[in-house]
Image (cartoon, rainbow over all chains, first blue to last red; front, top):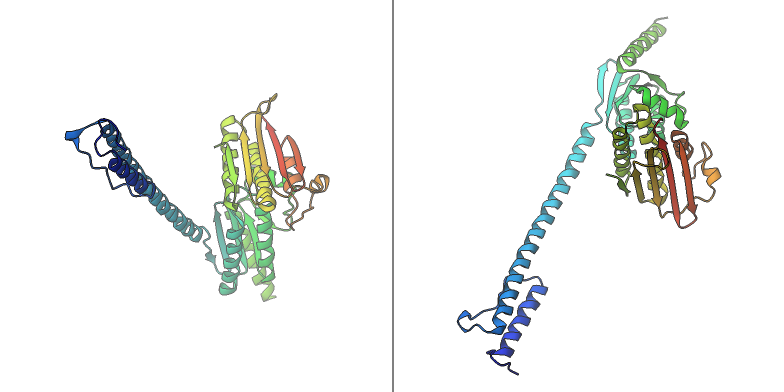
Length: 212
Length: 130
């Protein structure tokens, strides 16, 4: 079959089909050979297809690059998250037998568990008698966070140490009461310095008790 | 950000911060901001705990009063007995049982629609003081 005014019609249609098939398969490198000196009706179609495939190839390459970038960034975020997790639960031995945990950021299940674990290990290791949990830097205390705190406090008690929670902000205190969470079993104080005073008084009492 | 998808525990924090930010922009005081973000925390956690995933939609409008309306939707198992679920201290998953009743106390208005096997929608409103 040959159309009027179009040379090698079948062969050229075949070439177009091949190029399109290659593009469909993800190969955008191939182009249709065009004889510009013998331009006819089909030449503009061929040129159009060539341009389209070249554009498509570029687009695909760009989007692959974007996907790679994104994957790289996600990996970085995950790494940083882990780093923050490590950094965000420091346990400071501030005095003989006194540990301070300045908690910063949201407390989720995993972090709370990790926190309890490392606190218990540290108490056993340092023979500490008092742990001060400062939650000034914890943005929200909902029932789940309160529950985590209660669990931490009772496991510290099981080790024979005392736990005091400091840094409950006024608005947080009000919210906890509205929520209906009972924290009366937990020793709480307004701020870290009150916590330290409490710790020293407690240590003194214990020392006096040992003497007598 | 007015729509937060809850898929993992971390998303609860995202929903809470989004609600707090909008509440702050609307002129709610610090105590109300904390109430709102805590209520969102409780209800978003319910989505995560019971349904696995769902959505939190935060609107700075609750006709006819001016305030904040937050909708929590999931396609989870649904609540068998809403009255029981609203009881302080009752929980089907050994949590504190403060989520629903606590969120109700922290907000000015709460609606629950739930169908077993289909899912749950909880709407809370916090009104700006007039």
